[in-house]
Length: 298
Ligand SMILES: O=C1C[C@@H](O)[C@H](O)[C@@H](O)C1=O
Ligand SMILES: [Co+2]
Image (cartoon, rainbow, N blue to C red; front, side, top):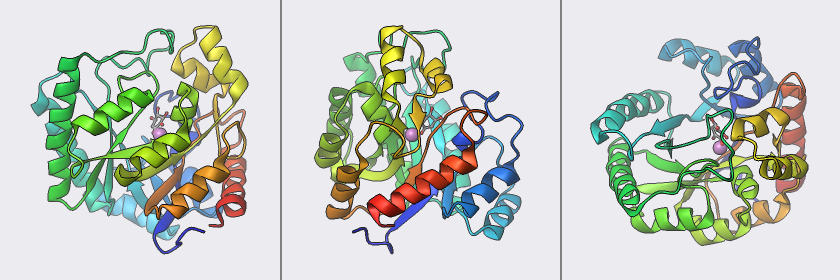
């Protein structure tokens, strides 16, 4: 179904050690994490906070395990801070990723984001960007996209729970007001489903912009609890709202079929943040790998 010469499968370190909640998996080493990724049959990963930043050290550790770096998350503050501040940090991030051989840069606007707040109710208090904020965001992203292009890379925007770009309308608007040659989209199944969007419809509508995929599944009963009990994003994560594909409520078969039919090229990254003390990361990595083999044929 997929063209295996153009689609690569990776897994994010967030199931081993969570950058947003460092106490989850704090005791797990970088070496354990990347060894288990390779052993479970993945060929790449994104960069986590335990990864060494010295390029030769990181390259050697990955090379030993036949792993590549697909990308890494970047927090932008285009709506709340002077553009130059975001740009400076972004260029350092871009250059690091470029050295590591990555082709895409994951960017998410964190101005007024509540994703990192432990007690802010996720559904009631997510930010809604004003027209002025949308304009600032679009202008800034176009400029950052141009900087990615300079290095033959692409900026992929990560829509995210608890931020100003979460819902279908917000994603549609962002795609509409940014330059389609400079700003691309990261398609994260888990965030779309958790928010109550239709992941298949988003995939169909924005396929030409989608250049990076995060595969995560959602435990529906916990997603409902987060909404009904006015819990925060991180409380939901701690309770296990996310899991690996095939272990939750999302029907991945039509998603894989559509991605393959439309000729998706690039990385698909399993990204399932949950408490490693409750969900053994190696066991869940294997579970994900087997599910993708059975369902997507890769
Ligand atoms: O891509 C991601 C990176 C994480 O830090 C984030 O919170 C997670 O939910 C995600 O989708
Ligand atoms: Co993601």
